[in-house]
Image 1 (cartoon, rainbow over the protein chains, first blue to last red):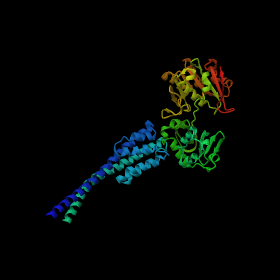
Image 2: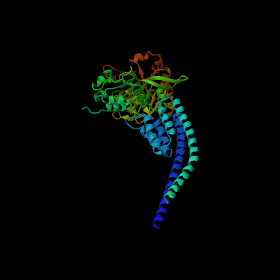
Image 3: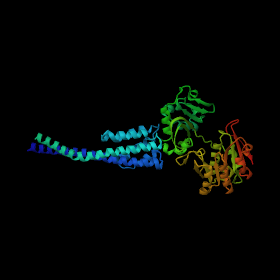
Image 4: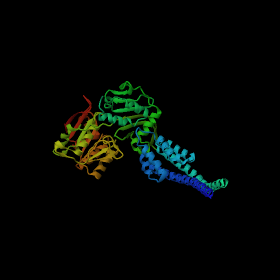
Length: 175
Length: 313
């Protein structure tokens, strides 16, 4: 009797773990598209800061840090990095902040590389070159986002289904 | 061990804007040299130099421990990035004038390859030379002339005549500060001062804030041509006195006449050796005919910078 309850309890646990891992994987997919969307929006704002407001990058980063979530935190880290002494280069601050944003997410390196390339241009080129780089990165991120959305639709159910099936198989095999 | 005086601190602050390899060497310069330095000159593939009262010499001449250091392209690019705050787009107006004012009021002259479109400079790249001019305020340097400028509570329009590098901007800055804050021992309460700072030298504005003390009642038009700025200041801020640097063109003289005609005193500087030298220049003919200026202060660097004489006109 006791063994039966234990087995049932273990089975429920494994099934719950399967469902949770499915939920976690599909949430990661959703988070990726959301972050890509926020990054694209932030680049539009960055374009305005450079071309119309003519704000120094440090100030522009501070305003962009008002964006919610990870993207806002990314810009806040960039803003704070620019106040550091002795002064680091903008590229090193950008790279460091990008790593802090992307590494815990374990996202594809596509968006990381696109954003990193932008960091090489910021602060060094003339206005037009910087604006071109920002526009190019925004376009690149839009393309990646379309792929990520398709990925999300395709894989969300698959992750959930596979996780439940895998958990069920373990339960059956153990029984 | 020498104490870190204010000038040495300013030097260190300016040195913080240079690339790490240069910064490290500048930091090792003895304090007494730092406090005598006017300029840090960085030129690609050339030794980093300091301009002091002893001349313009490589840093190794001042600090035997510092080996001669030739600035690299990376040093130039990084220093340029730091002085522009990585935002060429934000300092473009200044860059078009050939210099950038950085935090602390230091001015950085820039030479390199200009990128222009339809005659307008868009950027500078391949930076070849940078000249960091250390800001220096000499509070109280106008003490000896305030009694002449302030005459029974009224301000005499004054022309400061000086060859380059004799301290005319430093003098104008202290005059602005004292007229604005008031001069207690003369029983003079401060008045509204309008500074037209065409080259951002008097006040060294950085993001809307003067980096030099120009007084509590001083309004500043930064990087504004004198000819337009004087009229604008008269209309917008109703100053009691206008202070401006380096009158040069006929339109500058006309703008000064405009201020004079509205009863506002003008204190301005002009390049020259003496009053007669300036009177010979046709550009200023009308100003002398109309007796706009009632006082002239001539400066020279003999026997030392800031040596002056006062002439009533």
